[in-house]
Figure 1 (cartoon, each protein chain N blue to C red):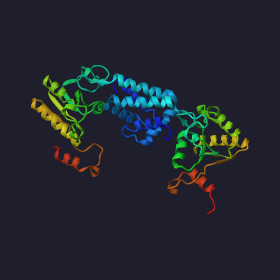
Figure 2: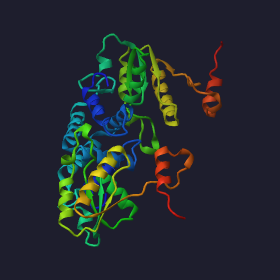
Figure 3: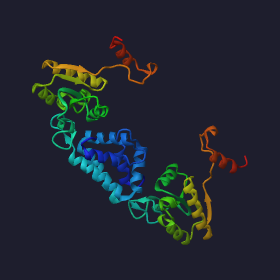
Length: 198
Length: 198
């Protein structure tokens, strides 16, 4: 906004959020300015709380406010099943579906050499420690079905297999509710290659 | 997010923004948590700057960092033309188009008795003062074409006319690039009622 550097700066900062463009950021800032300082203060205090309280779980590297996250703290979970994922948001998708009763290991990203993300930048050493501590019967790899996710999956699989651990990964195929007509070739290929007897 | 009140709270605060639902707010918070404290700090500092620096112009009640906004400060603007609008964001729409060379008066909302917004809650007294100070040849009403905007327009028109000021308002009609087929009845009615000789 012409002549208002503080508004311009706030718009620039807000448009760095994923899915938020210049226009949406502007709307958000106008909303704040229209609703007065209470709204801005609540926003600041919620951000400060986020900053102060949220850490990563020392066991699985999921987001946590305490020492351990709520999954690791839950004694009813099966500690012999370990699901490896990229981010805490992937964990949330699993937990929302409520289908998995084991523990997780959050890598904190995926291998991406071009962006300088190697195994050292991810929670690979800590994964190795958890595997070598023993007691894990199956490692389920649930990285994203992208090029980098696949590379990460292969790296994790090699690591775990070299330590004698059973490794599985999520099935690839048709998404439920989708239509064949609109499916991309590689998904179709995976669905065909992974076909099972009826 | 289960077990993480600070994340839950931040999501709740962010989903109060217009056009931001629960899901988008979650994505935004995950983005912040993923990008570490630098991003959160920049966000907080931009909000604090907004809070500290942005006031309303003492002349037209547009957003301003100084005493006057950049429109009122600009001596090349025509002070005999005054355009009445609801919000600063409406002013920005005019300024972006670059079609208007007069000054503005930002009401800070629209009349809405059900929400307790009467003339006292808007910048009506200050508008009256500006009109009575003299020198304004034409008052252009540019409130939004909604029920409340119309009511506000009528109120402003009566106020200005009682003070002997010429009052005009924006034309209603077909939006450029639109198609008659998809137009709502009231716009079509306005377009027909306001037809002009070719």
